Length: 237
Length: 311
Image 1: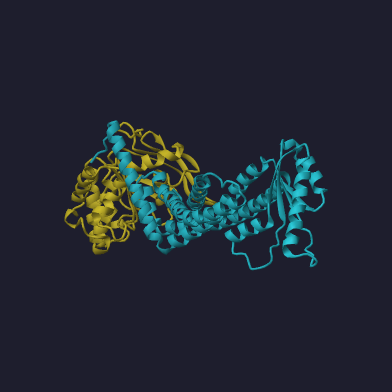
Image 2: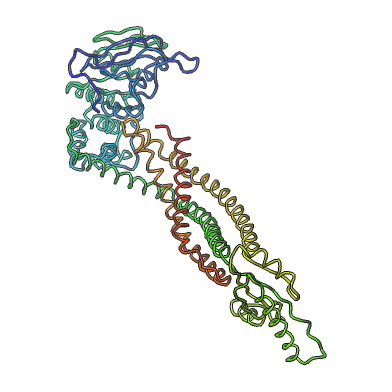
């Protein structure tokens, strides 16, 4: 069954409707509401513990909201049956701060790994993986293992893996957290380039210079509350 | 880079086949990662199966013996030879013994329920036993035996009572008493075998579960990536189950060897008791062993994936 992702800008790609999340007695999110439209590029900013990662985890159903609704397209994420969660995740690309690459496996194999698990044919895998590696500019290093790549290159492999399935939504959790400023900027430009191809991009970060430089929509969280949502914004304390 | 939602049934089948191949590859990888623990698990499981299988073979043969003995209409009458007197020569003593047996045989044949009497001399019994077993070199301790056949099984109890009271008769054995004894033995064998198998099965499940747990720990990163990228839960779980199943299968193959030896000796032993050995207990026992081993192997994997694998 194909999951109903929005095809036009009339329906938001992401909707948080009065979402609260409690971890025990700790309030991680407090009545957060916002919409992200199809094709938008949005920064989610805030200090550590502000609730950025919780929002991302609610999106890919690693966690469920204590109250309120989280929608991805028409899907009420919390109401999705467990066996449908992998299908939801296949329609998203997820990029991690620590890259989460498999050591000892080439960049090609890292990107192809999940496609193989999904039973996609070798020819189709080659077509998709080469395409993704071209997008991130690593086609020449397809055979290199993560240990032989710089931090920036490793994150590019992570991004190639996230986009290899042609996702409608790309979620990146602190994608530049382990990178130097110059490499971080390159990664952001790469994500912006992917966004220009039509993929909705949501990035959690606390990298102020990058956010200010790209001048995209910025949602600011503080102690689990949404305190600011500004189009073409900047990082506010 | 878009997904193609319009897959034909042939494409879907091809996809399923590729997934199956990947699952087998992942299973083999898991086995390679487990290293020497594979040998520990398989040998332990094979030992359990050998114990379980041996008890099962013995029980099946005993049941066959009970059936064959229970259906019999024969009473074994054990007769003590007359005391050898130094006043007579050896041949005279033997003559006394033969006369005693002939008299008894004639007396028994007069009983209305008796159809036939057949003598098995103690010398013949002793020779037969020594032929099959390495008996130590002692004087023949066996009595003479008269095999008495009754007309109807319903008359066997009354006839046995009459025979027991006859002069020279030391003991009477027939189906009912033997069957009861055999049933007691079967109960003990079943109890001991069942308990041993159960204890060892739990132990092996524990070892398998721990090995799978270590594998899950070693694959945490890989599993997390698979989960986040939308790979189905069963794709992640199944290789662990297959690995448990592979342990079971290998263990059965190993256990078949000692088991065939047990069956060979059972055949010899039950042949001595003139009972047919159970027709093909190995087929039944192998099937039972496969079920037990798959249960233990897959069960061990299931315990670990349930407890430690968050998908």
